[in-house]
Amino acid sequence: MSDTKDKLIEQAGGVLEKTYDDIVHPSAKSVGNTLSLLPRTIGVLLGKWEKWVINGEESIKLTALAVQEKVSQIPEEKLTEPEPYVAIPAIQQLSYCYDSEELREMYANLLVSSMSTDTKYQVHPSFVDIIKQLTPDEAKLLKKLSKKNVFPLIDVRMNFPTGGYKETVHNFTDVSEDVCDCPSNIFAYLDNFERLKLIDIKNDQHLANDDFYKPLENHPEIKKIMSQALPEGYKHEIHKGLFELTAFGQEFIKICLS
Image (cartoon, rainbow, N blue to C red):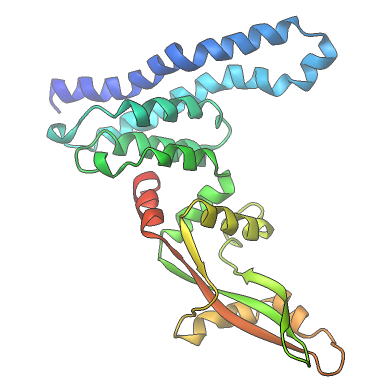
């Protein structure tokens, strides 16, 4: 490896720590000084902010190491300086995710992508803000969604004898069950992904192969609902739908989760 590339890789991590010192750390220090002046009982309630002061810097250092390792895989002729409108807000947000390896990894990937001429112009500045609005569970789920683009989901409807229906279950899917710490939050996760334009939920379309829906139809929660007794004339019905990654969502995953 050339001396030039060695220096660039070293700078890749160093720029994170310098930006932290110049921009984030003064605010963190100010918070720490303020906490020390508060009465003990109030200080205890705000103790997590003091933890942020201490651990925020550690988060920067851990990400700097990850960035240095990833940048070492980029050919020297393709290394470039990241745009400040991407790098600075990303580094600022890093101090808030010191307890989430998943989110730190996404910021590291984002920064590295912004330092390669192959991907620099695919890094949208909104990606920083999107990561900011994700939980560690959602980061894990997005990694699973990167394996394919389209996923089945179902609604359970209670049809009325006079016509019309009421949805008993909306947008049910099992994609979170083997990856998330709180798989029952899947409905909120999907709503958040849709709000962020990462996925499209389509209740008026379904996959051609019905076999994709059988695991959902046979899920214990769905079977329990389908077996519940209804008044005469009422009937349970499963309605098939799907959700898919948007082009924007695919690009976000490519940059931040590859």
